[in-house]
Each structure stands twice: as C-alpha cells, then as structure tokens.
Length: 321
Image 1 (tube, one colour):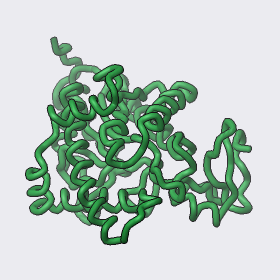
Image 2 (tube, rainbow, N blue to C red; image 1 turned 30 degrees about the vertical axis):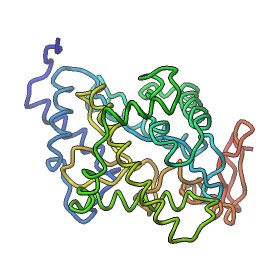
Image 3 (spheres, rainbow, N blue to C red; image 1 turned 90 degrees about the horizontal axis):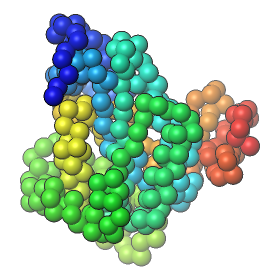
C-alpha cells in the first residue's frame, strides 16, 4: 500500500524542483548547448515529487561501477582506488544535500553491472567479484549511509556467471536488429554506440591483429554491451519501479535517465573505472590514464595498494603514504 501523502502536491512539486536544482550542476549532458532548467526534466520531477509527497526518502538508482578497465595503461589494477572513493563520497554528499531540502533525504543504489557484460569487456569474473566486494567495503568503512550496492549475485545467487548473463539477456535484452535500427536513427544512441566502441578499443591492450580488425571487433562487441546494458536497465526498473534513474552516460534534456558526472573531467565519458586520478598541486583531482598521470606525479598508496598519483610538488594527503 502506498504511504499516505504527508505534503500537499504544490509543496511536493516545489521541493522536487529544488532537488533537481541540486543535481543540475553535475549533469552529464549529451547536448551541453541546450538550456536545461529543472522544468525541462518532467520525468525526474514527477518521480521525485511522488517520494516527497509521500514523505519518503527519494530513491535513486545508478547502474555503473562495473569493474576496472583491463588495460594497465589506463588504471592502477583491478580493485577500486581513490577514483571510486572520491566518486562514492560525492554521491553520498549529494544525498546529504537532498536531505537539506527534503528531510527524509535520499538513498542511492549503485547497480554494479560488471557481471552483465564482463565477457564482452574481457574482464574475468573473479576480478569483477573482487571489485564489487571492495566497493561495498569502501562504503561500509567510510560510513556512507546513503549508499547501497546491488548486483547479479543478489538476483540469481550462486549460479555460474555465464548462466546469469544468459538468463538476463534472454529475458530482457532487445534484439540486435532493434539496437542497430536505433543506432542508425537516434543521435543519442549513435553517440552511445561510438562511445562504447571507443572504450572497447582503448581497453584492449594485447590485440594481435590490425587496427581496422580491432575496430570491427569492438563495433561488434559494442552492440552486445548495449544490449546487455538495456537488459540490466530493464531488470533494475522491474526491481525499483519508482526510482529516479541516474546514468553515467551523457543524456539529452528531458530523457528518462538523468546523466550525472562523478568527478570533474573534460571528457564527458570519463569514469573512475576507466582511469586513474591525479591529485593536483592546487588540491584538485583529475581523471586521466595512469600512463599519463605517472609522467606528472608520483604514485601514492592507501592500505598497501596503489591509490592515485600526487602531482610533483604537491603535499601528500594524510593516510596516503
């Protein structure tokens, strides 16, 4: 039974707009030149207002945090590091800010999707498990009480990972023809396809063929990643039907998903799991490939593992020695 509303609808709509205003500065836009006031996001406003009117915490879902890139020139290993730690802290603070305008606050479910397409991105399932477990441990250690995690293990238990992927794909994935038609006709889908293809090319460290052969293979795999991602999104929507859906991919104004940046970066597609972080001398944190960051700074460790790079001359942060 839906809880009885505790706020009048006009007040809920006003507060919903204030919550959207908190999200807008961090929007990951597919159309950065298009005006984007809160009123331009009716799906998010309507869903947020429903939680506000019922006096409930706003529920946000974010597919992402799948696993580290398999390319050692991009990342520091297969476990979460300072990039994920900063991103998780940002998401938790965002939920805390929502509580300032809506006292019940917000909770965000990180829907870790590594197992959904691990075979397509060439990452071993044991690395994906280790990444997801350490992500959950990070949240617990830092007491990020607004965040929880969700992955295929909570849906299909101890089934072998290939069986889990096959079941989710069979039940939820669109057909290849449907995705190809969308990529041909929809500029947003085209941008997504090209972005995923680029990541797959960049993530390949040991391909033995020609550059053109690698491009062809990655284009083929990109369609698979999109299909599996859509399947995962459908499963999440079934599991959390009322939630406000966030996305780590750029989204246009008015889309059903709200694109959100986790860390500042010039590249709208950059994420902590495809890069390392450099701690600049001025205190700023910047995502970049580890091969580039190591030319600009020195490697810092946390808990005995590589964590990030400190720009030459920067003061090391406490606890990162």
